Length: 114
Image 1 (cartoon, rainbow, N blue to C red):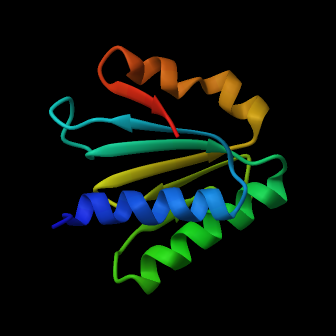
Image 2: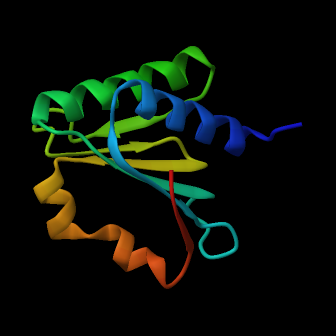
């Protein structure tokens, strides 16, 4: 049986795929930090696309009974969704390249392209 963390991750990945998010990367944080079990990083091709994807992820988590909080949706260059067991970052490509959070976490965690 899947635990909540795995179910949340599946909802996030499916929603990102359905929303045509680009460059989806899942970072396994288990045993590396206590902030979450997974971090998911994805890109949208415009502010509208980023906002749309983020809103869908937030809605689908809520529909499935999982609490989360969202920040950055007003500007939508970088939206953070904290689903407690899974942290989701959705960026415009140039903002993602600037912050390069995958590189920051890659030495501490296992990175996998979805």
